[in-house]
Image 1 (cartoon, rainbow, N blue to C red):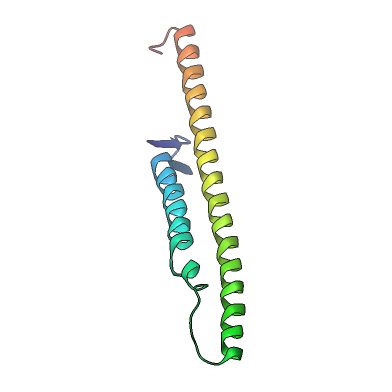
Image 2: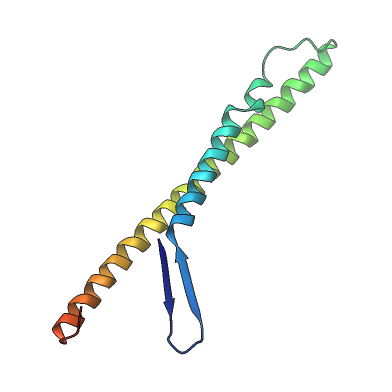
Length: 112
C-alpha cells in the first residue's frame, strides 16, 4: 500500500509505504526470536572447562550476556509493536480522510 502526498507545487512531498513498515515490524520480531532461540540460551549448559575459576568466569559472562540479550529482545518487540501501531493509525486516518474527501466532493457536485 503506497500512499503518496504532494503539495501540488513541486515542493516537498512524502510517501508512506505501509507494507514496508509492516514487513519491517515482522523482520524485527523474527530477529528477536532468532536471538531468543539461538546460541545464547545454549551457553548456560554445563560445560567442563577444566579450572573452577574459569567455569565461574564463564558462568558470569553467560549470565550477563543472557541478561543483555533479553533486554535487546524486549526492545526489539517494543519497536515492532510501535511500528505496527503507527501503520494501523496511519491507515485508519488515511481511510477516514479519503472518505471525507469523497463525501465533500459529492456534496460539491464532483465525481466523489
